[in-house]
Amino acid sequence: MQFDRIIKNGTIVTASDTYVADLGITDGKIAAIASALDGADDIVDATGLYVMPGGIDSHVHIDQPSGDGIVMADDFESGTRSAAIGGNTSILAFCMQEKGDSLRHSLDVYHAKADGKCHIDVAFHMIVTDPTPSVLGQELPALVEDGYTSFKVFMTYENLRLRDDEILETLSAAKNTGALVLVHCENEDAIRFLIGQHEAAGEFSAKSHATTRPIAAEREATHRALSLAEIVDTPIVIVHVSNQQAMEEIERARVRGSKIVGETCPQYLMLTADDLDQEELEGAKFVCSPPPRDKESQDACWDGLERGVFDLFSSDHCPFRFNDPEGKLNDKGKKSFRWIPNGIPGVATRLPILFSEGVQKGRIDLNRFVALTATNHAKLYGMYPQKGTIAIGSDADLALWDPNKTVTITNDILQQGCDYSPYEGLTVKGWPVHTIVRGKTVVKDGEVIGQKGDGKYLPRQKSNLVTSKPV
Image 1 (cartoon, rainbow, N blue to C red):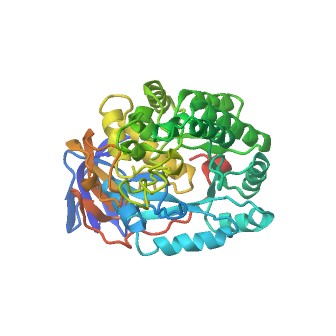
Image 2 (tube, one colour):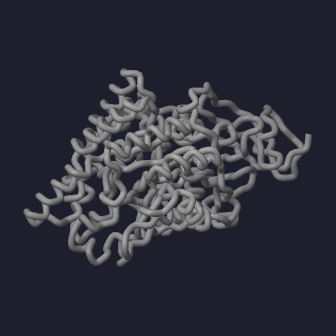
Image 3 (cartoon, rainbow, N blue to C red):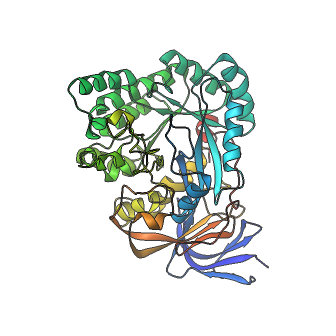
């Protein structure tokens, strides 16, 4: 049998199995898996490497409107390039509806931003900020049928958040259409109250971002989101969970029979609120929401990854340049934490951090690593088995990992649009040395081999959590 390409002698790792075999690739698909394959001019020797499904980062913000005079650091070219450097072969980016716009118009805008620019494959979650009857009753059903099968709602940020009655209406529309809802859980009224107290006390530094968004504000909103979903009887995803108390709310909801998926991120494993408490405005580099917590919360999130409280490990990549008047150090941001753009970069470092801190330190095994970083994302968001696994007929989206390669993270190797990494100087063991998208090399040994436009848009099926189909 003739193949376009063969990956030889690698250790194949999926969410369920680990074994040594060759992979034959034809027309961008995995065509054969066997102990010894021949019949290709293009041979990749993977001796000593793990051959894993390419990472799927299902929580990424790229080129998103961020307020007057504020510009995100990554467009779709730089964002997907950096993702590929970090072993990712697909991302799910958020498409934000601006007030007064239709969902369809918002999607048209984002497609124009992404089309022809991406190094890896891209799908879109919608962000619903203006849930009018026409949006929920007409637009949403049509878009779900077109393959936009998930969307996000916010319980914080004054210009984005929905009231409880709006959340209920939105959840009901999701149930009726088969869409899956992601929820950002923080209590905006509590946050605004605490901001007022800090300002009255003259507390304006970056560290106040963390103390105005305490664990209780996340826990309460998580409980409320879960309760609203229970009232409507529809599953939801609780994104970027940062602490034990919010985790406990997820576990209690599951005991009651609710279908809930939990997600956490590298910042809640590696950073703490102390990182925001730095001189010379350096703390602004670590401003994100929810904020990093403390060592106890880090330990809890690791426990959640090990025990299955969390099914997803995503980056929440939301990059703003630090030393830039359109970024973290805009004129108002220099004066008050309130105006520091929320978000940190992380799409390139998500996988190496979890591999080094999780697999290499014995917290999770290789199969759990693949599930948390690829397979569960594909299943949950309607891309499986096209994406997220290594099987005959699946897309040949692969990341070849050198488990012994030691790398010290510096911003220059990440090839992103941001001018810093919050993990600068962190040494990790294990690194993706070859990223392949639909059979084509995109990155090899830190060099981008592919071209922008190699990545394609991915329409998706309905979530397995919604359809309850076994996968």
